[in-house]
Length: 91
Image (cartoon, rainbow, N blue to C red):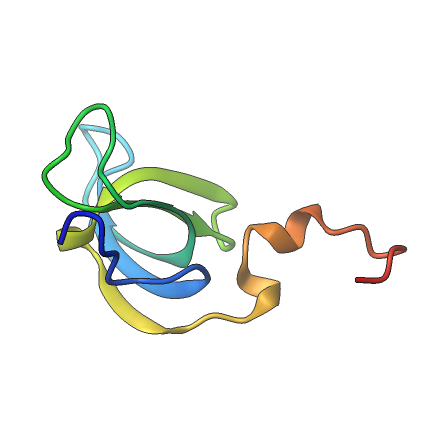
């Protein structure tokens, strides 16, 4: 529902996509990095998410909530934020 995201930050979700028009559909699994609770410029019918795939090192943008399936809660190491932490600095 618009304004009420079903998934939370770092949740591991999966979805299907094509990397290019002439390639087969693949299933991607990744962690929720950004929540667009009111949609995006291109659509405002449902919540969308940016999903980070650590395996592919890609941030997939504007994935509609209806395309996602919940897998499990993610760990800190699986999050996009983890890439930006300075290991020399304590929290």
